[in-house]
Length: 213
Image (tube, rainbow, N blue to C red; front, side, top):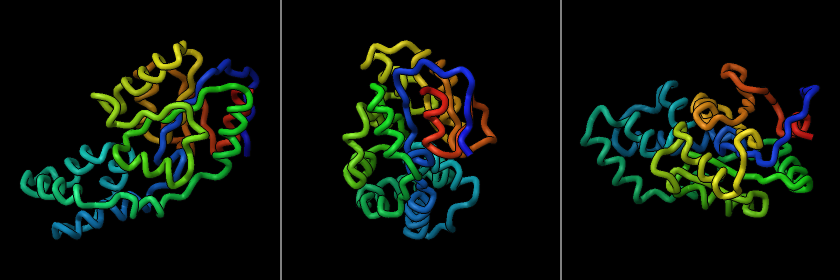
């Protein structure tokens, strides 16, 4: 069901998280880290680990999952250099109505950007799903010194387009995303997650249009 808000927001830029927002990436992330677990003889991811790797950088995730043993963490980091991340992109499932929403945002002149804690895999995601025509800027964890929830990625977008914070809405699905918006002082829309606070909650990408059109 689409939510209708009485007072529309005057927005010039919509910033999206990637995993869990543009794509259902749960299976892709689980497959990658479980394969790493198998490679070093460790048990599969626990529930709290699955949740963590969903919203953190690959290096933070490896430290969280394998960091209790420094030797094991170093081994996994070496193994990662040999992993072709493109093998896991096929498990991503694009969220419904995403492209239609992005096209409609473009038609009304809004800037569309991505702020993600993905690293080298993001370029492969963009290529596999032909997303480049749909976004004006992409900021990954490789483009900043401090990944989300630090506000640096949002600040880069603000500076690139000379935006005012009140003209931005960030769409995310995790506590990391919510804290990113909070630290950046921009509006936050929670996607398919009513357990985190937000200026609005939506279950479908098209519902975002009810807030800004």
